Length: 300
Image (cartoon, rainbow, N blue to C red; front, top):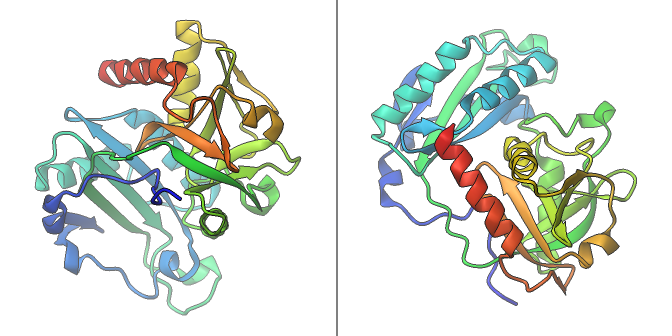
C-alpha cells in the first residue's frame, strides 16, 4: 500500500516554527498562543472558522469567505465582535507580522468564548467571543493522487447539523476519515442521506465523465467556495458541468475524479474503493480546470 497522504499535506517550512498567532487582538509566539480550557470551542466545538489562501499579496476570494463567515455567525447566533473591516485588519496585521506575501494559509477561528461554568448552555459564555488566526507558510505538496474509501458516515440533514456550516464540530468527518484510513485509504468518500455520492471528509468532490464535470446537488455538503469557483469557470469556458445526484457506479466508471478546497485547489483522485479512476493520475479536464482556476485567482 502506498504511503498515506492528506489533502492538506504541505512542504516543510522551518519559518513556521517562529510564526506569530493572533489571539483576541494580540500577536503571540506559537508556544504562547493559548486559549482557556473553559473556552466554548475547546469544551464543546461551539464555533466557526474559515480557511483562506494568500496569493501574491492578496487573499483569494476574500469577500466570499467573509460572506460565509458572517452568515455562519448569524446562523449560530454568534456576535463575533468585529465588522468586515475589523476582520480584514486582523488578517492583515497577522500577515505583516509574519512577513507573508504568498503561499500562506490562514485558519481564522471564532468561538462563543470563555464559559463561566463547564456546561453546554450558550448563556454561560459571558465574556464575548474568542478569535484566533493561525497563519502558516504553506505550499501544497501532495506526492500522488488521493486514494478514497467509501464509508458509512454521512453528511446529514440540516435539522441535525447543517453540513453547510463551517463549524468547529467536525467529529463526524473525523470518524469518516478514521474509517477510510482503517480501510487503507487516505480519506473518506461520504454519501448523502439518499445514498448518492456527496463529498469527502475534508473537501468537495467532482468526477469527469465523457468530458462533462459532475458534482453533487450541494444539498448535503459544505458550500465550498472553491467548489463554486470550479463550477463558475467550467460554465464560463464551455465545459459541461452538472450539479446532480449520481451513484458509486457512476463514480467507479468516471474518467477522472478530483477534490476541491481552499488549500489544495484541485487535487486528483487515483482510486476509490480499490478501483482505479481513469488513468489513476491527473487527467486532462482537471488539468484544464486547474489552469482556469489559477487565472481566476490571478484576476480576482
